Amino acid sequence: MDGILLITVLVIAGGAIAFIGDRLGTKIGKKRLSIFGLRPRHTSIVITIFTGVVITALTFGVMAAASQNVRTALFGMEQLNRNMRETKENLQNTEAALLTAKSEQEKTDAALQQSKADIDKLNEQQKQLQEESARLQAGNEALLADNSRLAGQNSELASQNSALSGRNDELTAKNENLTADNKALEKRSNDLRDGLITMREGDIAFRAGEIIASGVIRGNRPQEEVAADLASLAALANRNVSARFGSDRSDQDIWIYRPEHDAAVATIAKSPQDMVVRIVAAGNLVRGEDVRTNLELYPNSIIFKNNEFIIARPYELTSGDDSEAEETVMNFLKDVNFAATTKGILPDPLRGTVGVMEGAQFYDVVAKLKGQRGRVILSAYANGDTDASGPLRLRINVEKNVTQ
Image (tube, rainbow, N blue to C red; front, side):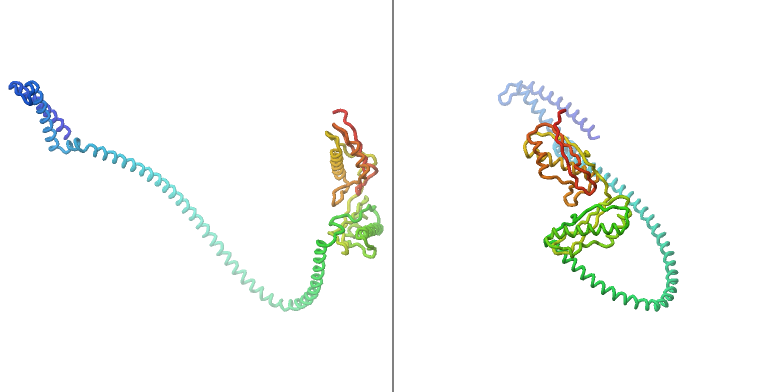
């Protein structure tokens, strides 16, 4: 309503200004007044303009005095715009806070649902615990009944206790005997510990697992004959020990565990084939100490016959010098050793080798390879029949590969 009134007042004021200005200009023009030395026509124009300015100013003054909205439109527009901007910013902040509040509300709702689920779960667990409590209560009652029954049995056991007292005296006497045996075992343990210290710090003549003596004993014979052959092998081991120690130990037999000895004799006697028997050091043997050994048994048979082919390998020679030739022969001997071990020849426990090769034979093969270039083929053949106990003796051929 204020806007309509304001527009009405402005329209009326505009008409009045136009009418008054026209009338005033006409009168001034008829009187031909002059101010500031201006011509009457110009004086009429100035007065008309001044009159319009004064009337307009009075109009705005009256309107401003009569209406708060006019005053606000004329003098408070910047403040109004600033208030509008602040109000808009506050509205945006309020909307953002509202979105945040909605998000928090959603999280709270989810947490509430989870809490409800947890409460349901806890109620279910409480129900299960109550059932378990009832079951335990029943079990407790059963235990009380068993306790009463055991109390009756306890009285019976008390009567049996007197009978056990006599048995206890008997066991006490046996315990004293065991105590004496324990002292003897402690002394033996101390001796063994001293022996271990000696083995670690002393002069080791045989390493653990090293072969002291080996041989082939025929199987499927009476145990007396097998035992005699095993005694001969033990004598050979004793001579080898004397040679290694550098002193005669013929009066000190090597130590073989009796049950192991008897089991070996029985096994060989019942075996349908010959057996390879190895007497090996049970541990590191130090000079001056007792020689303790173990027995190892392996079925024996002919692994390679005389001139039987073993393996062949091609090699590519580039320089033809001594080092290349020696390296080639060593690699070939490793392959031969692996093939012979796979076939069944027993390797040396310490070095893992199965054969022997004289130095002259080795350097003869090296000499044949020296100076050669290109591909050559090395082939190995058994030099004599070789059984599982070995050693494997070789005959090595060197051939130039002409199909390369």
